[in-house]
Image (cartoon, rainbow, N blue to C red; front, side, top):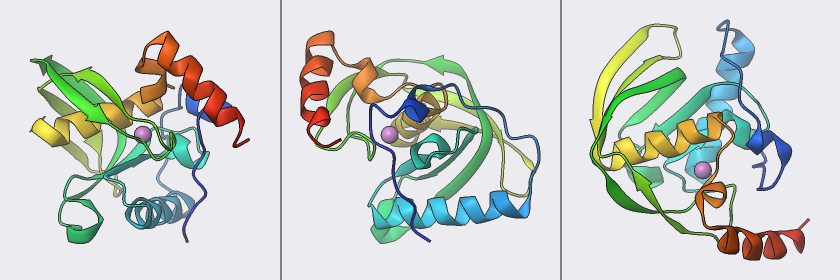
Length: 164
Ligand code: NI
């Protein structure tokens, strides 16, 4: 089932999400629905707070909705050993009609659980590293709008208030 995507500045997007404590059938259903939603909305990543669930869960596919070749479901992801710096032009399903240039790390290490609860540990760089930083930002209540300049954020706030 495709889920409704929360839009900035809905409060759930600004909250720090809670760790997932238990892998339940409800969680599996949420994961399936998030994957469907990510692909249907042509995203390369989706974080649970974007569908109104304030828990530390993301799904990512750097190959996008057409290929669907590299799906990752990460529970309680942690990024470490971040290195390098790249400028990244980003959009977000929760921030329609907004793009921003953001400084991201070039490479990093990821520790997480997969959807079966198995521990995962891997290195990521390039586009995948950028997506992972964008999605884990969501788990900490940070969107690309929050990372933009005050002026740009103010202009977007005005635009977004017309949709509400
Ligand atoms: Ni996003």
